[in-house]
Image (cartoon, rainbow, N blue to C red; front, side, top):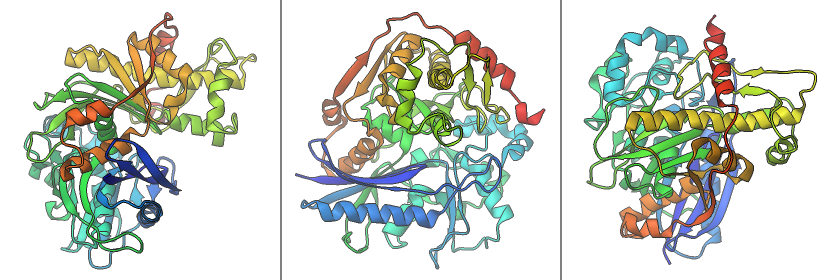
Length: 485
């Protein structure tokens, strides 16, 4: 039986996992990754630590499986960027993480270019995306702008290391998150690179998401010659792993943040207010598939905050039972805008707020309101998405760590008035990039084969009248522009 190893390089940790040709998951290995917060609003990673963690997890998996490894796929946190030297292989300081807000003021300065950014990239002017991060690196760190300089997203960094510096490449799903890539022409934008003072020569070559990116060199127990043949940003990989292959198919990943993606087919749509247009994937020489996306910056991170910041819970898994111990939130509304709000609001200066506190407020009320904020933010995005596209979703496929909470998914179904479908396998980012890699190597013949492999676990159907949404919207508006008053 053929085996594909999927690497999932996420925000808080990296995982390598073996996926067999029958779609079953096997051996896995995980390592946490340190997050650094040098200033308020700044978030960084040590790119060398990420590479070492990936290599360690790969080696763990390799020594535990007997079958020959057919391919490797890589999925990654998308907008995080790292700069390094080709000759030394060393990064120029820490990577800047997608959550980082240090370029907020720069994005305001670039406001006149918003129409161009929207037209060419499908994005908005926000520090979330890589372009202004790259400009900041070039401006504020001692980085020689010569032929040895590489700046790219984490997938490129990992491929470069796995291939011993032979491949400096990325795929369209990651390139489309940089604010430097023309998703209509499927190439780096000369205009936007000039505006942000980024030489195109320091950016990676863009290749199809399912295809040849290079081959491994020997790294300890990791053998040489394994094809790296699938690459996708984590949210696009989840869309693929959820078998959302038809226009209108929609998924939400409840992770550190939450990301709603809708497949909109092979024609790039015009920009939609409050939403992003992104490249979902490209299979070989086929036309790229596009997606509408709603990016919610803080969902699971709010649960982590309750655990680590407020000590309201001991473990993330405690939040569900605690929230269900009360019948409602007691008038509490939590707006978890710790790093601003993403879709559909796009307010980089909004900050986290808790409204409605009384002497009767308990930690259970705050826990329930935090879960409700995840549901409300998803509703914000889905309603904007259906309004913009003219397509009413028939159901929502869900994954990510918080998708294990039946209570939350039932609330979500009630607020969306559609079925919420949870698959048996929640590691859809891993499955998606494994499928992309395996398709290129003939492990799977077609997307039809992948659709047959997708298995439903539970359907949550609407059964209660939703409450609290209007109060949520009022709370969001009261928090807007907080840090810029």
